[in-house]
Image (cartoon, rainbow, N blue to C red; front, top):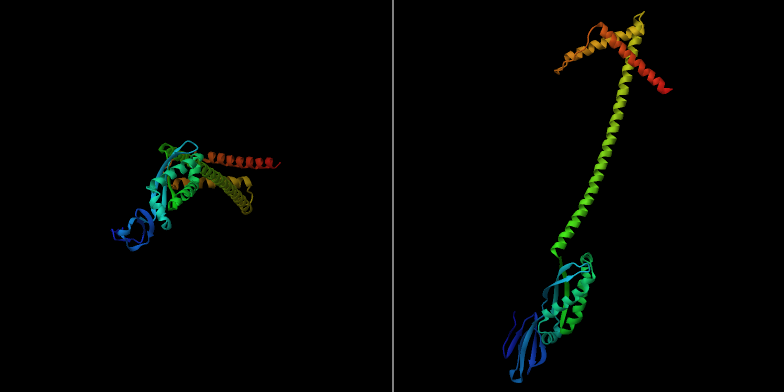
Length: 292
């Protein structure tokens, strides 16, 4: 790592700090650079500590308040305090185990007081609690805790499956509500369109019948004025016969292969005219009764 030393001299790298001893006792800290040591006076370079940031991943298994076993993955970033490097060198033999032990203690003290949902929502509070505890303890040993990240929360697989099923059921329920609302709107719009179509169809039929009535009235009046001695009944019979023959002509000219049997003869024509005339009279009588 760029740190070279022997009995008489040593070189400390830029990202390190050396610990100098005299006759086995701490003497001073060696700054980065090249240093000479006097072995005759018992001076030597006991060791070099890195001042770079180190990362330690700690996996903790614990139980929540609602009795769900979870695994928490914590990432701790720490470094040696340059001014207190002698404490870090002499006080702790294995700082990683020390940090890991305190992480276990703090996490297992906080998480059992929280439900699983609260743990996901307040994982930052757990990280802050671990940070405060480690800063207070590890600071006395010459270490500074830079950051603590609660990287992942891993519930038991069966619990995760149940949570996913609950979420899926809630989404399906919401989707059913939206689907029902959409179908309701579609049915309402369809009913409104059908009612509007029937209304417009009725208006069209009424106008058609009104136009037919006005046309017949006009034809009867014109014929009566131009041909003297004719009654309205005779003119109506003539119009009916004319329409009857026009209908037969239209059926004959139709391109569709459909056979229609129509009783034909003067007597039948008279009967058709009487039926139409009776129908118009009954319709007029019904309108008069409804008005009364």
